[in-house]
Length: 206
Image (cartoon, rainbow, N blue to C red; front, side, top):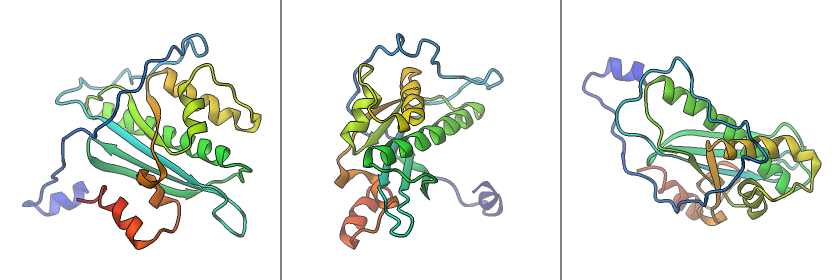
């Protein structure tokens, strides 16, 4: 991107700096379960300058979408304010036996991408406006990732489960529900009709 701009002196990047509309998610006390969870700030990061940016992440998984191997597909779309900045669509390495497992695996991947992006922003001196707003369309995943008292019934998903919850405890992100019809990451995981894909794409491309 910067190489292109260097060769086109009259070009410039124009982004919508408005915030994505969100309902504030409730405060939860995670410290009893994850007392050492903290949002790590690089010690050599420069001083943050300018307006803080808001992070919004949409996550989805298409369970057993591959008809040959029954691997699921992960879709992640991350916005800075209203500008799409990172998108990810890839088959999951493991074969999950439930929708819950594939959705939680996708959320773990999304959290890893989010942590990497937060590190890059801080190393570039860009301030971050609090936690990231994470939207998924599976209510079981939302409850397990947003309620400290919830328990995991499938032990095979324990690594993804605790990793995501630790991110929430560190105030890196908070997870909320987004209906399937409006989850923007849905178009990164499955084949859709032209009407539905066009409706979702129109909220990303402007």
